Amino acid sequence: MHKGWLTGILLAGLLAGCSSAPTPTHDQSSATTTASPVVGPRWNLLLLGTSERWTHPDTPYFEVERQGGQLRLVGSNGCNRISGALRLESGNRFSVEDLASTRMACANGNDAQRVEAMLNGAYRYLIDHDRLVLFGRDSRVLGGFRRAD
Image 1 (cartoon, helix red, strand yellow):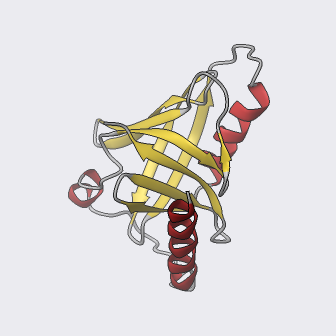
Image 2: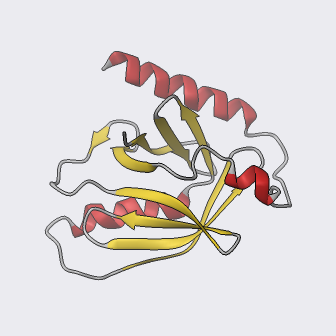
């Protein structure tokens, strides 16, 4: 458990040190974007923020698929299906656009909305082995995912 905290703190520190770099103004080439380790595997939610574990029966997840030269994020917020356009740019930029979801009523609806807010607010990502950490514009950790086997 302490190893996970330490990794999260180190990752946040590394990304914070890089946050003063200029924001890229162009997309990566399609070959580089599709070669990103984010594309392909299923990513299951591990943490909201730095330490809050998901406690509901249906675990939120996302996958990134290629559709007609574009990247598409599809998955679940733990209650409803979600989908949106995804842009991966140089500097590990991560941007979800037009995130939409179905609107079924759920007991954990507020937490499901927090998952959507995390994805909408993501600005950068960092991958460490089988973990993907999303950061906001302020370099704050928004949450973490684990690659599914």
